[in-house]
Image (cartoon, each protein chain N blue to C red):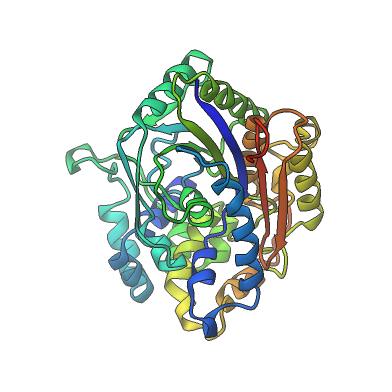
Length: 120
Length: 287
C-alpha cells in the first residue's frame, strides 16, 4: 500500500484545472493514464529521471476510480487533499451551501478516533 | 536595534474574504459581526504602525510537497506572489504580491542556523492563505514588506510542540537583535480545534469547544507551561484532525513570552471553527 502515491495522485490532479474536470468526468480513464504517465514522474524532473517502483494496489486503484472518498480516508490518504479535490469536483452538484461538505462528513461518520494513520 | 511593535496571533479563515466582500444579498448572516470584530482587530496592528511584517504560517501542500518537505522554512526573496488556483477556486481569494525584506530574511536564516534551528529557505516562494488571510484581515492594502516563515503542521512526522515554542522564542530574540531602525510586527496564524476531510467537519461549531476554551485561555494568559503540559502530537488528534495547526499558536506564544498576557483578546464562534484574535505590545500599547 502506498499512501504517498494516493496523495501524489490527489495533489497533482487538484492543482491542474484540466485534470480536475477529466477526473470528474472520466475517472477510470484518468486513473489509468495517471498511473502510466505520472505515478513515477519525479516532479520537476524530465522523464529520464522517473522513479521505477511506484504503483497502486488494486484496492487503491478501485477507490480512486469509484471516487470513493470514505475508503480513501480509511486508507490514510491525506484528508485535506481528498476534501479539497472532491469539493472542486462535486460541490457544484448541490444546491445548498456546504451541503456536499456535510454529506461528506456524514459518509465518514462510521470512523471514530483514532483515525487511520496519515503518516507517509 | 529593530523594535517589535506588535505580536499578533489569529486563526486564518479563508472564507472571510468572500464573506466580507460579497454583495449584501449574498452575505452570510454572521458576516456583519465578523467584519466588525476584524475591524477592531485590524486597529491593533494599524496603531502599532509597523514597517515590516514577519509572517508565520503553513503551506497547505501548495509549493511544499512530500518529496521534499521542510519542517521550518524562511522565505528569502525580493518578492512573493501569493494565492493558488485551488484557493481562488474554493475560497475566491485574489492573486496578491508582496515585497520581501532580504536583510531580515538573511538575519533570521543566519541566526536561526547558528542558534540550533536548521531552517530551510526558499528563493522563490508563492505563499498561500495561511499568510494572505491575515494580510487581508489586518493589512488589506498589503503595502508592507514581509518575511514568510513556514512551519509543517500538516504532513507527519511533525516537530514536537515544544519545538514550535522554542522557535517562537528564537524569532523574538533574533528580531530584537536585528541591527535596523525598522519597526517589526510578528504575525502568525494557526487553528484552534479543526476537522478537515473527516466526520466532524463543517458542524455548527468547531469540533471541540472545550479545547477551544482552554486554548484561548492558554494564549490570552501566555500560559506556555499549561499548554505544553497538555498538548502533545498525539493529543492534538482528539480535538480535530487538523488541530496540529494549534502549534503555530504555540509558536506565537513563544514570541510573546512566558506568562505574558495578551493586550487584546477576542473570539467569534462560527460554524466549523472558532475564530480567535490576539495582540501583544512588547513595549507597551501605542499611544
